[in-house]
Image (tube, rainbow, N blue to C red; front, side, top):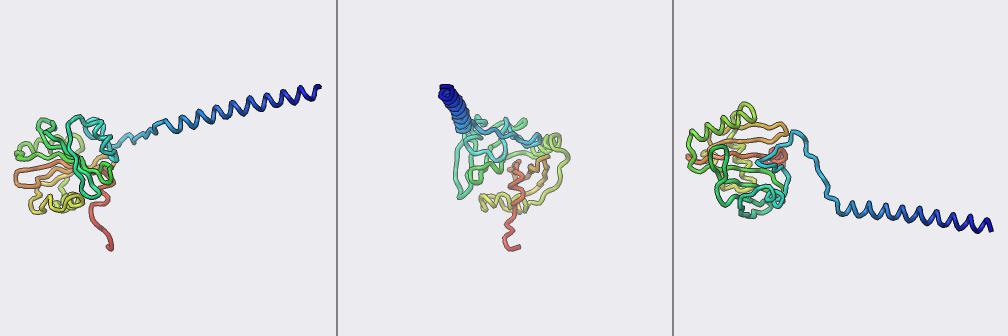
Length: 201
């Protein structure tokens, strides 16, 4: 009789433990399926406007960017640009996001018909954020844009090119791309490392 009771108690304990374990495993599995992974960016990671970061997809960028945007695809690139002008410092500009395979790689503000005074003011504003500017090669800026649209810039029209490098490797360029039009272009560290085609070199 004692053996039967001991056997029954052992079965009850085994059943209770296995049931508790399976509940715990089930909860863990459900949490794993529904939990959104959180990625903690490096403290010195570049932020654009209200928190946009490199590598975001177009939907994530739209969640931060309140301006109405239009999208276009160009082979493995997709472009998203503002339907109207956005405020930049004390001026307005066209805002363009450039995605490679739906990962944000470059951003540009374009100032059509901008004045030299506006250009110099923005250069000073960028100096105040990122330190002293350095002269940049127009060919480098053209090579970056050529990855998306080889017909967009002509090297001989790119002038007064200067640049800054942020702590995480982001590069910021300010330059004229025609006689009266200038731009600020932000380039992700990943994109900056692949400016030129190097196959076979």
